[in-house]
Length: 248
Image (cartoon, rainbow, N blue to C red; front, side, top):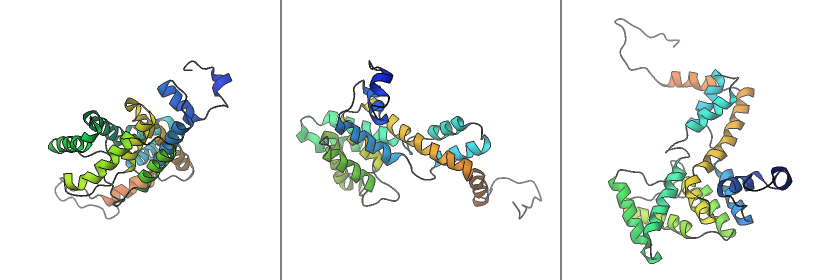
């Protein structure tokens, strides 16, 4: 496995986080790199009853023999709004970094890239949160860990400078969120840009398995389904004289 003997060099000797880094990069991580990757995995593993979790639970309710199908359903529900925004934010930072040469050109590069996103009606990935308005505590903690590990560098600086400039560039403050913090600390740690999406997917798989064990023990899949039916009123065409049942 990446040139190493599985049973003699890896099993019982490295953590799963270390193995993940090895599989992705081909090299064993330093202690600092392992610490940062591990922190990002912990930070994003669980996020409550988001759509990807709901669909996983409902899938298991409909097919209780197919745990793997329920996990897959949840992972397939991870896109540009949920989880996939970490990859988009990483590409956003990389684009700014490519234009910020020399480093003194950082502000101009940020202004240019943000203007292009705005012109294309694209959201600024990694910023803003419906709950965390002032700051996202997960984003703050990840940057603290990255700094303590001695790895905070160019991408963390870019992420923080973007946050400072957004009120002027877009007309309102947008706090750096966890999906923006994950790529900036991982990229500074040396994790490859092309594999960024895999980190939240790997983390959320663990969260889904926890939800699905709970679904088998304390099922809420059909409860959520019935609650949706009660909460949403049908407003389409009806047959002449049709009167909805009060029990519906």
